[in-house]
Image 1 (cartoon, one colour):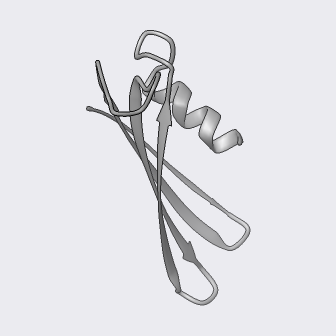
Image 2 (cartoon, rainbow, N blue to C red):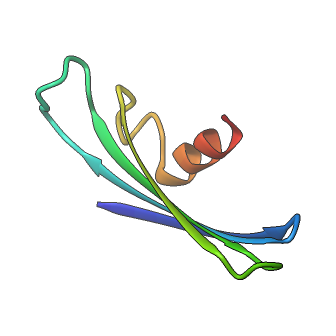
Length: 78
């Protein structure tokens, strides 16, 4: 399992993103090579409210085709 974490601040928010990636040789999904969990923690600096969002993804890219950092960048840009 590989991890990537990033922290950003802006627009009156503080945000932490954590990405966990696990590679599989077989998964009960055709062509799947990696499973990804993305967790966002967003804190509103003006109200103090915290929101947490969890997303699960599957990709056909192998660990040789896409690193954890590359996946995090692609997901962030999507």
